[in-house]
Image (spheres, rainbow, N blue to C red):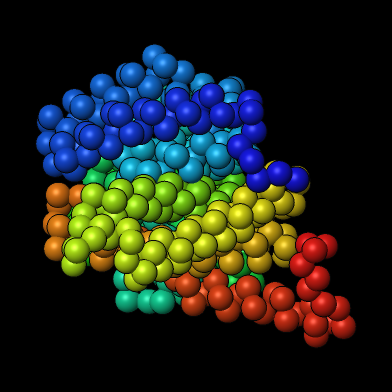
Length: 402
């Protein structure tokens, strides 16, 4: 097992890094505006990515993607994560949805949604979280779907459905089974085109002041064909876990890309600025920021690569060892990113609080990262319980053998 970037992956990783630093990152001020100019610029970046063989690198070849193996793509995803627009520009924003459809979609669903997703002709959206309940316990979800005359009738309310305002469809997690069914076999996923009558976007909810298309949606008697069920009935949680396991590894690698960018900005700033008779990089408190950031980045990186190695070696993402590994990295990487960006802002002083650097946007995204895909507290509790079960059974958790 090696944590080095494989020689076969380095050329494409370097190409993606250059694409990010030379084209995507300088374009961020325009891309954030969300106007026609930003849409045209994003379209041009996508054209360039396709022309240069950098498009949808993690998608299987049979879907029109680059076909990079899982662990190879993990290394590429790290540099792609330097900007919030990396996934959109390089065609990988749809990866989790595409892989989910690739495994579970029927022929009609594949034709209508899957191929256009990979070509970035349409956007997906995913609806799980609901207002007014603790969605960290998804068995409490109240949105329901009942089968009536060959149609699913969906009633409920979801929020933080990302990009619902521009998506062609939403994958909705909803209760389809009667009371008394086992909680984790009571929910299903149903594909709902966003132009279906009764699908109503109530508002876009800014996150820490940033508008990112996180929408609140009402399902008021939405009717879709019975064939819009994704995968087996009652298997919504099974599909969700298969989607979220590798997805969390991708999240963490993108966190590392952002942390690398913040670290670069911090260290460069320490060499540019002087105060109290000397350069900042000679001040011991500033050196402490460098040390703490280095060890947190490297620790989180090795943890994440170890989890990715387990999945790549065949460990099921829903298996007990993988779920411990993934739970740990989700917490460690999100905390690490928050801390590293916080130190970079501190080193930049007042400038770090402005839009003159990317740090203010990065900081707000980092804080949200400790909540989305499950808050830290849930991952901490479930991870500790899984480890403690081993001791309750008379075993131990010997790290070198895991």
